[in-house]
Length: 290
Image 1 (cartoon, rainbow, N blue to C red):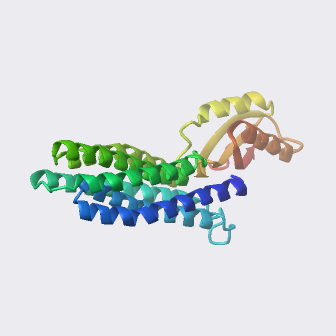
Image 2 (image 1 turned 30 degrees about the horizontal axis):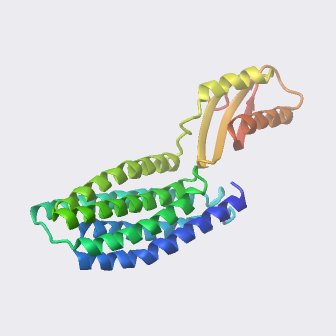
């Protein structure tokens, strides 16, 4: 990924961080004064968002550090670690909302609908701005995706709080507050689980889901006449955008210029699979690992 794209992503995260962190304080006060679980749940979510966005900003900064003797591949994987932590924090928030909702069902709490409506409406505006800012970033970047999911959860929480406030003002039915909080929690749960799943897959050095190793081997053998077989293929990524590959390549005969064949293989991988870092072992006999 280019430095310009990384800098743009970082600026977007910092803007969202400033918006979210500032309004979180307002929502906590409004939630306490109004007695609304929907507002307090959203405020709790915004607290984790503030920490998550701060972690995302740190991740972008750390990932730009050059490789060194201790981390020879560099620090880009820190972004994925941040996304994984953000996903886990979302799951914790969902658990807290569900727990508090059950408690409210068993012991209903009086809610001031008018104050709840004002605070929720202001929160909706702030969250829409933050979401638009993040949505304009790199959608394939798990760090940006995690930050956007956090803010989207806040946005849904604000909508739920507005609906709950209107129902309370006109009907006085207090259970709507925890009911809508549970609905938002389940919406957040799906996105949070997908974020944890995808970031864990990268951390475990899994192959990209779209990458078909068998098809790649077939195309490579058919595209470069000197190659008669490919094996020991390993594909993973420092991030979803920075893929890496190692493999053994069997040649039909002893090559006069093996380096030239390696160059053609690397070019094939770059042009067809966007793999910028590959290590190719050339073999003209039995596999050396056997």
